[in-house]
Image 1 (cartoon, rainbow, N blue to C red):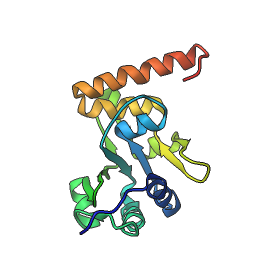
Image 2: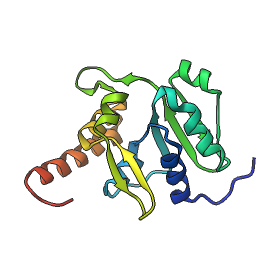
Image 3: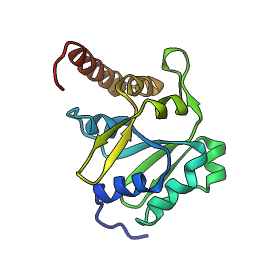
Length: 161
């Protein structure tokens, strides 16, 4: 499998047009909402019933899943690769306590971030991004949570991002 130049507009546009309920999470979502971060992969949370749509959209761009949809459903996650690394979570819900979140809740309150004039990206609202970051609670996730909470506080006080 030969890698080709990666076009983010084409990538995000294919996902948007697929009709798959797919939320960009992780640091790429934070970058999409304007936080000054760097990451080298993509993390998506996809509705468990939309794996095939999501995969078909990316297969058209020569990005292929590591396992078939049924195996992904059993595992709760899989990856897609071809030059870029895309981690895909397919659980109906994740986390416990104040980090608990269902996909349906996150999807219902999602935000659309304009990527280009033709393409938007679905991301969880900021409060739900905090929850997703609490799932792993690595040092970088805790730092990301602090940044998100600072933005939320600034917005609450009437400031811009």
